[in-house]
Structure formats: C-alpha cells, structure tokens
Image (cartoon, rainbow, N blue to C red; front, side):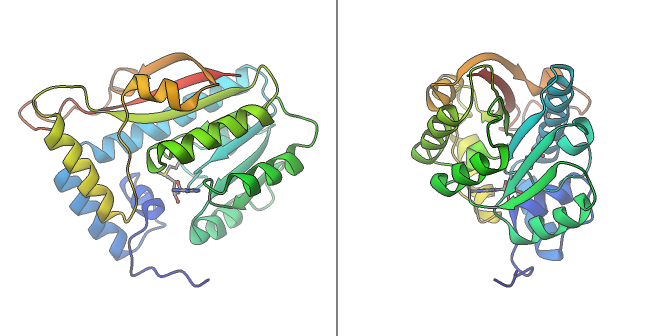
Length: 254
Ligand SMILES: C[S@@+](CC[C@H](N)C(=O)[O-])C[C@H]1O[C@@H](n2cnc3c(N)ncnc32)[C@H](O)[C@@H]1O
C-alpha cells in the first residue's frame, strides 16, 4: 500500500518532536498544532524515549535475551537495539514507512527483526511472536508510547494473550498519561483528545488504577512519574491547564 506523506502520522510526528529527520511537512504542521494545545508534548516524547532507554539498560543488566517491543517507532535515539546489543528483539509497528526505514537502519544488526503489524490484531501478532521466539518465552515486553492509542478491549485482550504467551519471570514495561483529578481535568482531557485528532489517532486517558486493571493478569510492581525520573526539561507554566498532566512508566511481572 503506498504511503501518503501529505497526511500526518503519529510515528513521524513523534520522530519530529524527538529531533529526528524522518518526517514531512504534514507531520511538522500537526506537531505544531499539538504543541499549541498540549505544550508538554515534546517533553513527554523525550521522557518516553528516556524511559525506553532505562528499560533497555535494566533488562540488559538483568540478562534478558529476548524482547518483544510493541509500537516501536524508529530504532534511533537510544532504542532497544542500542541498549540490548546481545539480545534478540522483535520490533513491531503498524506504519509501513516506519517499518521500511527501520529495516534499513537495522540492516546487518544481529538478532533484530522488524515486523509490520497492527498490535490490535492479536492472533497474528501472537503467532509471529511464537514463531520468532520459539521455545524461549522468558520475554521482556515493551509497550512504551503506544498503550494509550488502544481501547480497553484491545489493550486488555492484548495483555491477556501476551501473559499467556510469556513464561513466568517475564517483564512488561508500559507508559501512560495521567491527568490527576482537579478543576483542570476536563480541559486537559479535551486538549489531549483534540491533539490526538491532529495526529489522526485515537487516544485513551486512564487513571493509574485503571492501568493496573487493564494490564492484568500482569502484576504491576512499580510506577514512575517521568517528570521526577527525567526532570531535565522545565514543566509547563503553573497557570497552563496542562501543567498537572504527566506521563508514567510502569514495570509489571508475569
Ligand atoms: C509515540 S511512538 C512510540 C515509539 C517508541 N515505542 C518510543 O517509546 O519511543 C508510537 C508508535 O506506535 C505505533 N502504533 C500506533 N498504533 C499502533 C498499532 N495499533 N499497532 C502497531 N503500532 C502502532 C506508531 O506507528 C508509532 O510508531
């Protein structure tokens, strides 16, 4: 299917705000519209990718050798291939252009494969993962920067099937946005939902408690406020309605 780069795409908008070069004018215009509505978006993108790096380093220290990464985006700027050079990694993304560029970037890199698949099509995804990993089912599963694009039904179903695929001792890492309850909640939620329309994607806002429920039977063992974990960029002005919105990373166990 030909890729229409006159339409913005979330993968390339994200690449743009991370300072990458794999984006087009439509993506840059959409990014500007999103930042207008949601000023912390570029900071969240950097924090999200920084969390991915943290996860990769931690899994390397833990000696993990098999990683399934969902909604991978481009393997640039500190992705799992960099942090887990000795591991087998199955990257997955639905965007054909991202996958084509990623395959070029990964050419000649040992043990790294990039699959084009929609992670909502769980049967096909699980079949591919089972074939790729064979009997090795002690996995690290990355779901970073993508869970909030999936409905509860899609995300919950995916989590249950991954739990069944993985061996005990497997790990899950996932990020999500939170807008704590307060007078600015509705305005912040509305800004997030409207910004998602600029990226032509659905967006689902969840509380930390809802995230625990939707990832079950994975057991959440820690949650990290990424503003505290990666405080490098200043938060939005306190008078801005989005200033209390934040992004969290969780680790969960099988
Ligand atoms: C915000 S980027 C996150 C990239 C990377 N995981 C990170 O944290 O830096 C989200 C990626 O998820 C992909 N994506 C969105 N919905 C998807 C779906 N249903 N199936 C597979 N990939 C999806 C997008 O194409 C995009 O590359």
